[in-house]
Amino acid sequence: MGIADQFKDKAQELADQAKKNVGDKKGDARQRSSSEASERGRDRAQNTSRNAARGTHDRIDDES
Image: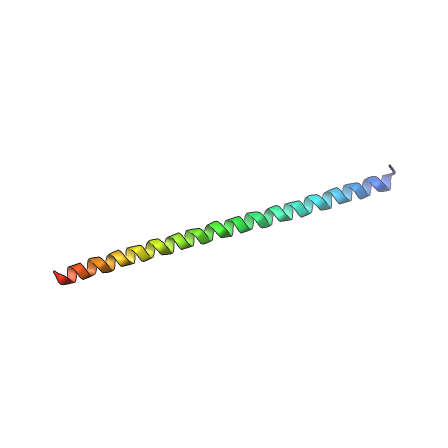
């Protein structure tokens, strides 16, 4: 194997590694955004439940 072939092989290896790292970063970002969306959805559900409970409590107080 000549020196030129060694450089080509190393360049290809580095290119493959860079593509893998980019893919990993995209996967991490997707995972982060997905878990953040889940948290926002959970927060909305909790707020809705709290608001409903407050509304019920307020109606009970008004009837008394």
